[in-house]
Image (cartoon, rainbow, N blue to C red; front, top):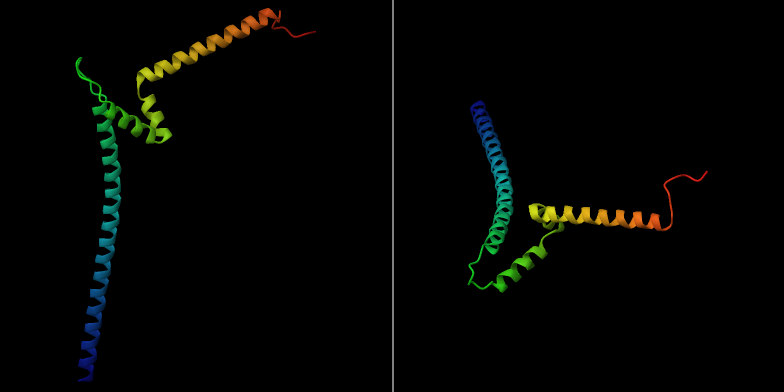
Length: 134
């Protein structure tokens, strides 16, 4: 009789331990799923913000008709949104536009030509030559 009771207690203890392990595994899996879900929501939030900013940028740059007045309030909001961006985002937006890159390269080339002209005229005025003094 004592042997039956101890066997029954051991069986119940084993079942309880097994049940507890299963619950722990389930709770670990649920916690991992929640972490994954939180990360996905964070990614979704950043993607939604990026998409919203892109849509706002596209709608502010839409072409207007000849008789349509420019919306200064929308322009002011667009400028304020652009100024609120980080420097790297501003730089990425400007370098993404081919006209801005061409204008920057053209101004750089013109500046180099101007400096070359100033150096040539300065060396000519002071009768300098590119030779070492002996």
